[in-house]
Image (cartoon, rainbow, N blue to C red; front, side, top):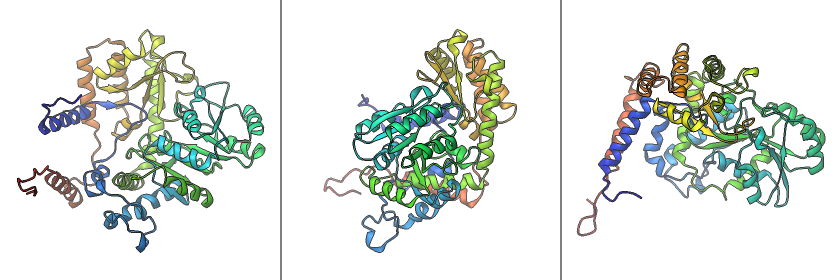
Length: 447
């Protein structure tokens, strides 16, 4: 419950304390990322209050006019950049989150109630929510499986597809060290059930796909691609759906009007800014660095005696690493608590493919975005291993993480003395000044 004595000063103080802590710590949760101050700016301004529905800019469809002045920051910035970087003719920026995009795709492409969809089994990294969401839409669910946690059995897939003739194959790696071979899976689908659609949920891989570090599933033959925009892509917490098929795009659009009301217009503008930064300020280099840093960090932890999954395969092909600290004598929750005290934020969880109990899941995506490189990772590995083992005072380790963040913090992609930067600061200050609560006068008129 909220303490009745809490004031606005208390709220601002808590937010300020959190910001200070965030600048001294390092987030290594693979499903989260940072974004630039410029990309966050629209969320502080008037577009955060507005609906925007008139994507065609038709003069008779401006029923909500609050976003009219800046609507091209969606239609002329975010959407064209997604088409360019995602190599797709059709884009929806309506989904609010990865799970919302999943629901939209299953509703639009999964067929009528009673139809069957096929998705990835949990033991092969499939998302926990997909079967339940599909079932709540009246869809039957079958599972793609494999002999190990990082590959699918295509012979089993062919038998399954021929038997159930699903409306949709929904590829949804959530726990993922290595990407599914989309081209081979699509070839199998086309051979035995050609009417079946293939959608790839690339939430975890999205920044690596847009940056060219991973092959684009649309190039591999998938009918559609989607996912959240805040994991390997350093953008806002929302999601997108891309396709090259006009009929499929129409199905998505016909469905989204009934599943998404406000699509958070300001976040969509923020996505456009993040895409522009990604294209013009090193997105492909960032994507390559994420993969290189992840594999290197896996080796560094392995060399320090931490049990890292998939050591025989180079630990990872993307941004995630899975640590079996239980085998090293430290319960995953205890390891996560120690790491937190040392200024490092990680996941601990059950359900990692190949694990019998809980494991620690980490990502190098935000560390890379924050600017860590080279010997920074050697220092980070030393701190990480010492924290897991509690072999050095955790307060001292936290100081080393804070020092690491100070040395590597990434600035804005423009000169901080430029007029662009100064104008952005002025907008922030003006927004704060104009959002103070005004108490009504005795006559009921605000001053």
